[in-house]
Image (tube, rainbow, N blue to C red):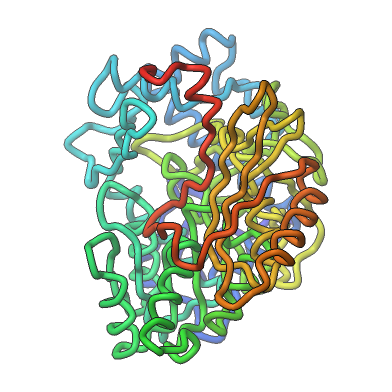
Amino acid sequence: MPLDLSRIARERGVDLRAWPPRYDPAYRPAPDAAEWLPEVERAHPDAREELILAKLRGQVRWAWEKSPFYRRKWDEAGISPDSLRTLRDLARFPVVQKNELRAAQAAYPPFGDYLCIDPVEVARIHGTSGTTGRPTVFGIGRDDWARIAEAHARILWGAGIRPRDRAMICSFFSLYMGSWGALAGVERLGATAFPFGAGVAGQTLMGVQWAREMKPSAFYGTPSYALHFADTAKREGIDPRSLGFRVLFFSGEPGAGIPSTKKQIEETFGAACIDMGSTAEMSPWMTDGECAARGGMHLWQDIVYTEICDPKTFQPLPYGAEGTPVYTHLERTSQPMIRFVAGDLTRWTDAPCACGRTYPRLPQGIYGRIDDMFIVRGENIYPSAIEDVLRAIDGFGGEFRVIISRREAMDDLLVRAEISPGRDAAALEREMRERLQARVGVRPRLELVAQGTIPRTEFKARRVIDDRDLYRKGVSGS
Ligand SMILES: [Zn+2]
């Protein structure tokens, strides 16, 4: 049964027959409705794929007509918008890598020749920090920003946020897109936005005090920052549960999808922990987003279409497989990404979710970046696996570092972990070593330190130090 797009246009304030779709900014579901756009969210996947294909055709045609970058790339691959007869044909399109975007921006500054609108129509400039090279510039059109807000509102609705909620946004308001995207979604949804920010000296303590006064019911930030926020509250003698948060939603780090971290956040705050987020290039990035049932992030396929692919060939893999997400915008006019590789690793399934949405899911979230994976004595290890083991251990003090080095021509894995006060260090060390070895396949050395010794981060935690890189590149290297 195909979707009745005329009826959806009448009842839901969105015309999906147009490209890009036209949204009514005044539309909002009834407060007790479970979905923002139920006909699409609960559709049979085949019916929804017809809609996705129609949107994809509009998107690809737009990029082909407006962008020398895509025209060149697709010409070289011998394809064009006409190659797109079914959704499966998308896999014939070459992927886009981050280094290509950087090169395009170097050659055609500042936005690159994949900007598909007149530069005067750019409403917002954001970017990456550029810690690993030339920063990437995001130029977002006004209409795109409105659609980002629309998508985020719809997905936040699925996470259980409602207009009666008060959402405290505790992350940087800077180039970083996460905070702004969360803010846009909260505002479009009609909840009360409390854009508190992060990163200023003393701000966390101030945040705890504000939370006590304002009683926000929703929190946005990174998982490691939420735990730091809770520790700060506890030091002031405040039980984080008493702050009154009902839902905490996260992006920027895999933590909210790591089972023991999720459990710890939920127990610490007495609230639901919701995992979200793909990558800034793909804004609206909440299209990897959990619903209130918390069975792993859904892929909201009719907003951003995601294929989970073989990390070498970038050909789609069946449900059940592990691979790397390849993302495609479906309603982006400014800087559309068509088959963008984010470098993440995940596993997907089409098993039903308790919420009734028919989108595929990532039951374990995005558990690593291909770049974050390190190999020690032949074992592939993700920092998220170490985090999962440690947070499940009673007596773990909350923070850790992984230091990999080479000793006597052998890889050495050192885990420096905090322990809670008054614990039997020898017993904990043994437990941590055994459980880590069972999980990652390598026997680590443990160095236990007192709780609070390792610095907390207000942003994305970087917990792995690989001294072998130093050894390989030479100390004076890049
Ligand atoms: Zn669900």
